[in-house]
Amino acid sequence: MARLRYGKIAKPQAGSCDLFVRYFKSRPDIGFRKLLLDIAFEPRNPFKPWEPRKLKKGFVAVVLFLLIACAWLGYFSLAG
Image 1 (cartoon, one colour):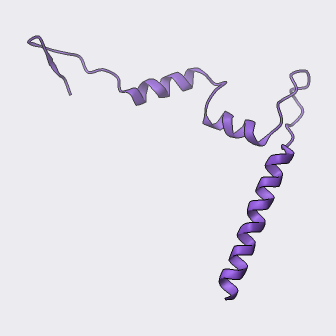
Image 2 (cartoon, helix red, strand yellow; image 1 turned 180 degrees about the horizontal axis):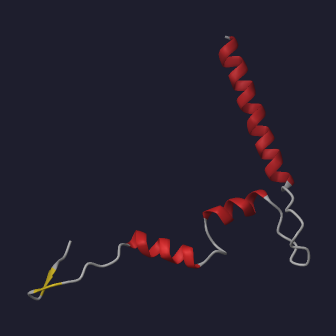
Image 3 (spheres, rainbow, N blue to C red; image 1 turned 90 degrees about the horizontal axis):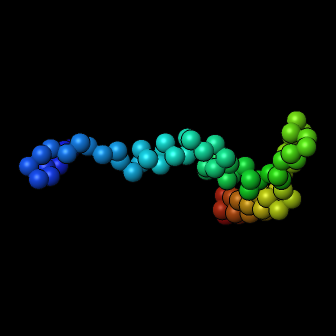
């Protein structure tokens, strides 16, 4: 969609979505995937990068609580 500007046809500009995609692809240290991994796992040890990251205890507790709550709700919903 070209717009008229002072009698000339302007070049179509890149959409904001394209700009965001290019920005996040150029920065692998940020992003939604990185955010989710940082929420679930402990920080990586920079001196031992080959070791796998451990799960955070709080994250495990929240996931277990949600699973128990879903099982409890499902049991009493289907039983009644």
